[in-house]
Image 1 (cartoon, rainbow over the protein chains, first blue to last red):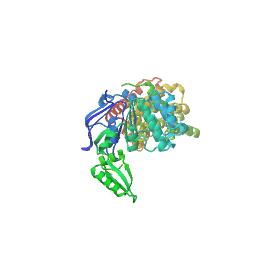
Image 2 (image 1 turned 180 degrees about the horizontal axis):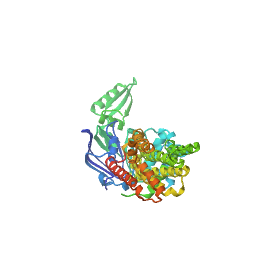
Image 3 (image 1 turned 90 degrees about the vertical axis):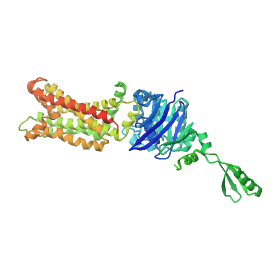
Length: 280
Length: 242
């Protein structure tokens, strides 16, 4: 099975300083790959590199099985892109914008109506973009990116600025698209989102890939192996899951000072902080 | 280079629709037309030239400068500024399709304005072929120059810095060429003066190609070829996007 995205030792530098340093990872067909990292780590730069808005300094990039330098305009029919620089026509309404992009992509109008409903934009479809809130614009851009059911979808922070209900709907839509075969490359700050949507993730820190793997693998590898204990004084104590920890618990049980004991599920947030040294 | 007619017509439709909803640009076609209507209503006496000839000259110069130079450059710069150009580039639109659509918009609106001005000015319809020949060539030249200004500008503000001096250069020397020899010399090199001179030559000779017009055809040809070359060079070097 050919990779949808393939990066091998990819470097990019600005003013002789490495912005991306030897990035190597692959995204297989049907995957949702999450690209996480703190602000300034190089997520958007990677996205721009993969969507040919920037040129690599060295290394190999293949998209849809093709070397990136050989990707032609027709290949864009198979790709959908939502980036931080997507724009909409301000003097056109939501529906007019989507109809315009639908005509460019030769997509029927029924698909526009379907997406307007999915994105909860149907009732406001006649609103001019210049009068739309940030969330409405973001949903319109997202609808535009998935209009043509792309094989490969690049999403840069797709749910930023959206309310929780719409985020839920967007997640449902992305999972549905993925079930239909769309491979998704997603950058996000939202760990919950990454955990919910992504089969595999890559964590980028200062232009270098700190780790890749399934969310479960990374949690097990990097998360703190701790359990939480509540003693009789209602004080929370964190104890490592090792022999010393077991002895400590044993002592507490014997002395009757143990009130509750909770196993602590590792989460991506901890993995992220462990790998980047930064909170997001 | 592959151009899709479906995409091109979609881009053109959107450009025309957007033009009608954009008062800042739409006014560029109204000002010269209103100027001609206003001046005609004053019915002022003219010493050297007839009123229709004066109105046609000044109206056409204003229209070609305002519409021809403003529309393509401003709309390209606006698309850059608001990132809609990048959205198009990241979909399946080629730079050439985008530019053809912008040039079509600029050219059509400018020629529409020229036709309205011709009809309002009161010049005989029999002279229309000469006018059309001159202004079509002149419009091609100014629209290509306008597209170059749009390509090199980052946004609408930086575009207007380029537009004003070019507009002054193309508008003022032909308008005031009778005032002194230096202006006359500069005017003879400008594309819009050449366009109007082709028309004047037609009104006297009755033929599109005649000895009097040869120099002006040459001037226009130089402007069209020159601006097309600059257009291709700038496009190749910079591309469309910032």
